[in-house]
Length: 192
Image (cartoon, rainbow, N blue to C red; front, side, top):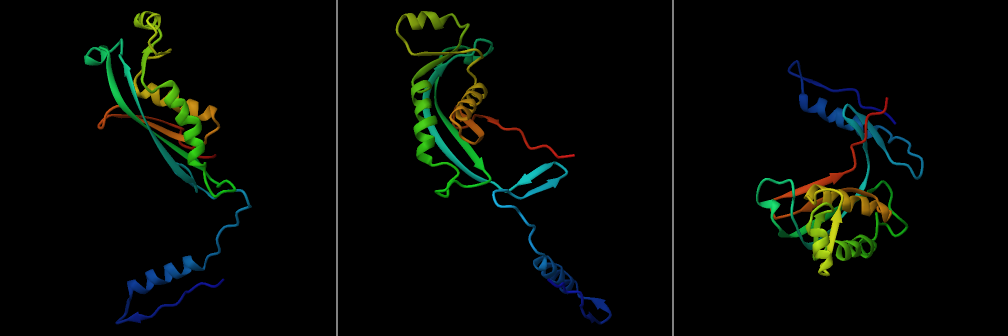
């Protein structure tokens, strides 16, 4: 393909608009890079690798109670939340149906797990003295090895999504309308 190189002078000055137009035309004349089938384009920048990706997200809601044993404020008391979780899934290719993942598959796997494991549960740290007491009374308690913060719930849901084979990149847990915690895959590093 050819390139445009000429421009005219008007009153001894280069017309800046023509120079810009020539640059745009020259960029349009470049052939796109060859990309083998099944691969995606990657661009190396100073801050990492940028790759073309398809992204979808699915939102779920669940109600839960918890308390934070190491908290110095109100959150040390038993209290509840109407939580919202947003899961973002990515892939550089679409499946044969033209999707990253079918939303129904996300609902039937991770959505079902959230409903059965987190919804209408009291989520406590396993060392909380209430765990055994409440379980002894037949209450639905989920005991975690860590404090049941929004951050730790986001990580828990992320790891569960990975176990289901979902191409998860970000999980955000909204504890309230104004407070959210996010767990995400790390940014791709620059290749040396």
